[in-house]
Amino acid sequence: MAILEVRDLKKKFGGLVALDGLDLDAYDSEILGIIGPNGAGKTTLFNVISGFYKPTVGKISFQGEVISGLRPDQIAGKGIGRTFQDLSLCMQSTVFENVFTAFHKSYSTGLWSAFFHTKAVAEEEKTLKKKAMEIIDFMGLTVHKDKLAANLSSGFKKALSLSVAFATNPKLLLLDEPATTLSPDKVEMIMNLVLRVRETGTTVVIIEHSMKAIMEYCDRIVVIANGKKLAEGKAKEISENKEVVEAYLGEVEENVS
Ligand SMILES: Nc1ncnc2c1ncn2[C@@H]1O[C@H](COP(=O)(O)OP(=O)(O)O)[C@@H](O)[C@H]1O
Ligand SMILES: [Mg+2]
Image (tube, rainbow, N blue to C red):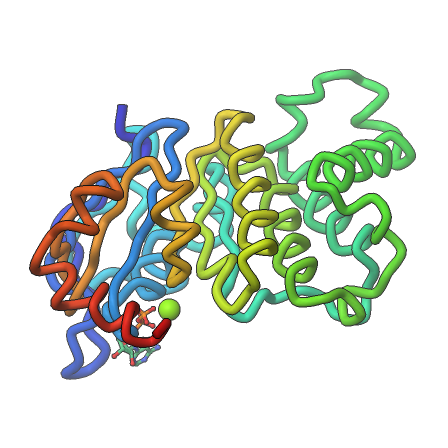
């Protein structure tokens, strides 16, 4: 079943057409990869889905309900979490504080309360801290919990950004370049966390330039070019698609060699 449906989505910035009639579905509990050249409209797509930008034309539905036109906080409240290309962490706060703040905020708006429906949890900050700590353990950040975000390596900064988004208990998580610029072992670390997140029943849509992340970990891939869907399919189909190779993969391979 499609949890997210994007239909005929257009987004213009003045005369510039960033999204040009995009259709896209994300299915329950899948990891959907989004690739495409720089400027293709990938981040704009996330900004429109999460309500930071209003669509010029088109409709977005989440779990059967139209969400296009709602405010970012309303969309987040429905269970759509995201990370940002620039990470958006509180660099002078610790790992624990970053996760706890995200967890506490969404807990008080009711997202987790359905999940941990005991009275004690609702009453006790101590219990909330314990739950935030469980998220940190789940994401493999236990040994780093008291470090300032600023002092983490780039791989663990990205792991923290993912944890902060996951702490809001999303049903759909939008990840903007969670593994770009990381070494292959750190790409694996991040993508193993993504697999772990998906096991909780969360659908993950991930924009990435790392071909390792896209080809080895995504269930399905959508290629975007010039604000339109150029192709979609499994890794093998995408890597053999002539149009995709011309528009994007050829360029990636040249960059690698
Ligand atoms: N807030 C904005 N104002 C004006 N132009 C924008 C804005 N955001 C994105 N764009 C433009 O929209 C196009 C798509 O950008 P973006 O979605 O960031 O691409 P991608 O993430 O695929 O690299 C680019 O030409 C970019 O310059
Ligand atoms: Mg981008």
